[in-house]
Image (tube, rainbow, N blue to C red; front, side):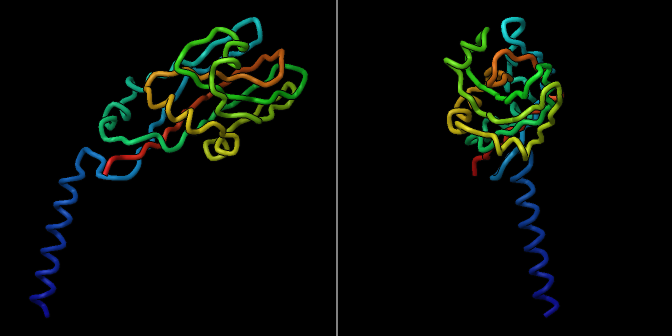
Length: 179
């Protein structure tokens, strides 16, 4: 009995050592979460309108694991939106692989991926990653654009005119690893 236990222990340790060796510096299967901190944005109708350029090739996690990834499986955001208008604003996030210089161009050409975030008049609203999933739309189109590695995000509101600040922006990408 004691001999069988020692043999089983040696086999178990050997298998564990093999798994650790195979898994060293690579994804054998599973997910990786890429986290990107983005600069604050100011968005105003007809005054200043700034897309947020995202280049995943500059992110160390993405670069390290890019060849081991199958797809982007989840997209989430966290941010704080400040509404400077005297009416409720409905926050939106749009995505595109092209840069646009006006809200009208974004609405005509980009993909709306988040909608319905109510920001009170003259108020502030914080969005957490888990909560951002409640507002997500057009997910498959968004995943395709994100996987191109270079894209633009547009933080706008449904109403016009609008004047918002978007602060403490974090983009979360959950990516599926190759087996």
